Length: 446
Image (cartoon, rainbow, N blue to C red):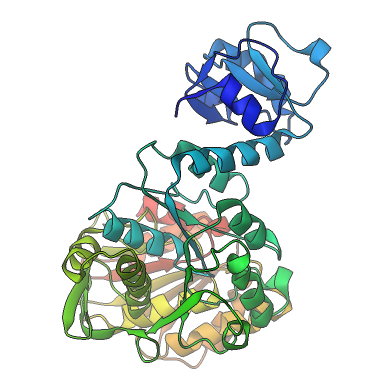
């Protein structure tokens, strides 16, 4: 980034206090990340960001948005007076994106957003200068932050859009104005706030709010809740799936470390397991074809893509056992899919799983946890359950031919000790649960 204060002030209609020739090379709202040339954005939070202005100056900040009394402002920094620093931050992101003018892809969904983003970036990077959402920066702060940190030569910007409530995706879509967009799937994440899967489907469809009128929308072909929401759209709609869709993947072989599938007569490989990951790859394929990437280049990108940490990641336990860590987040659809895929693998020894509570499921939470028994049946040897909601699954597994050990949410150390004592070198173990349950600590301990 290289913007002058004059350019920023004119773009946002701000009367800057200080040198208009000052050059801004980055934008940060965390004073700890400030470097020489930064514009500091003091946000409201547990503590007011304005309280950290001196720390920002000491670290090299040359300018700051400012919504407090100017009389109380410090010396030695250009001030950009605004009514709301967060809004100004978002507006600056839009202005910077318009300056760089990349094509924009938006990805949302109850599960698979980050994996799909990673696959899409790997595919499009075969032909374009790309930049993608880093980590899970996918909300009304994280997405503008991504926009402001894209390199000046970016040709395609790939944005992940997350949500907890209705209207959030619409806001993000209108900010980003994507050329193409995708909904990975409709699950149960945040159903506590949205009431039903139908409510979740409507919230995810908000991604069309800012989608270019002649743009592309990719949606799962096996999701009837979306069908009535697709009528009267001006955008091109493509569907994807393993059994239904205009983009259809036919799985040929699934192993621990890769899945092979065909689209028409072309063979593709992805370095991860699971039919659900093939669906994510179909989205990346759809974006690739939309932006005129050849099938050969798409195949090369998919074969080489790298997952963001903690998404279906294989690790080795200290005793040599295989660990499949999928502990970033969980909802019933996602947990069922990974349980099913793990159960289908040809593994040398016992098959174990550590399953933790899925959060924010609302009044039907216990029933949704109990339904996970359908994906366990007689295919697992030992199941460890962690959390109060998982008691419902413990009850559902009472008659199943599987050993079950249950731990309440205050007994993580006991869980870790029990898993360590049980796990042997030839075992394979899956760990899955909501991020708030902290199963990453269990993975680290193993």
